[in-house]
Length: 212
Image (cartoon, rainbow, N blue to C red; front, top):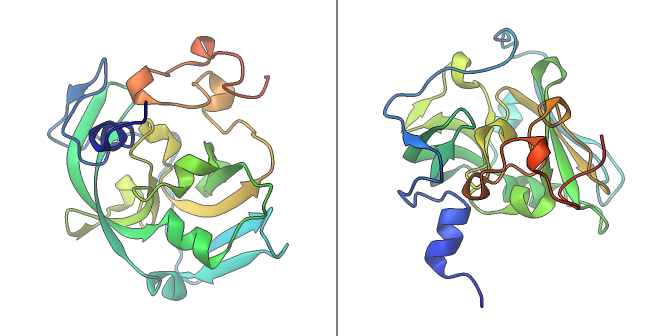
């Protein structure tokens, strides 16, 4: 039996208004991150796509050019592994599908690694990255992100726990095999589905991720 539209919306956090198991509704927006807040340097900042691209080339945009990419508004929930959920935020930015259209992946690409400042990384299945609700956000609820919340760009992947959406994104690497990111190497679940409470690596089933 296929998923209903409501099931699909819930699974991808698309403003469903529902809480996954073990979560509580958060009315504010806590500031959580690992390491220091980076300083934005507009003259040297760029956004790169590399790895298993269809043309074998690395592509990049400086900040002015990235700012001219098509922007989309996405209404989506955000679920943090620390058990808070923000429901129905309005995110503005560049969808992951836009990036995939501009820089198509090679036919054998199965995963992506999203890279952020200081070498932080998060791995995603290509299907999760390509979902219409996945967005490189520059705004929330009509206001530009603050630096503490990821300015100039953070990834929002509503169908997964929020650690899968890094702040201060700088690059996307297309991959032909899965590889664990920063928190996945440190004991978080490789997939991170909040509806299945995939919080920690000890919960993983065979096939959920690469061996440590």
